[in-house]
Length: 89
Image (tube, rainbow, N blue to C red; front, side, top):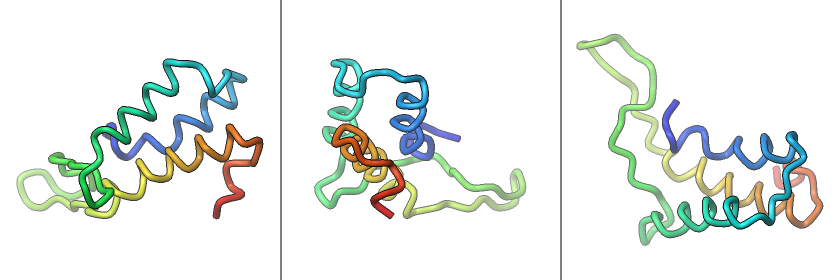
């Protein structure tokens, strides 16, 4: 798992640990996602993130670089508003 694929689980994990999601260090993480977004809303991802066979082929999940950071930001917002993270589905 790379930094893009795992981002959407972070807000839920922090909530499970009963951490305050409005703390500055959490807000800075969300700001980093926003700041590193491309103009079209996607995030640049150079790594091959899917499975495959070494030196033969690898799967590149092109939508992951857009979906997971956006999901992390939306999950964070929902949790701050007191909604369950799954409420946005």
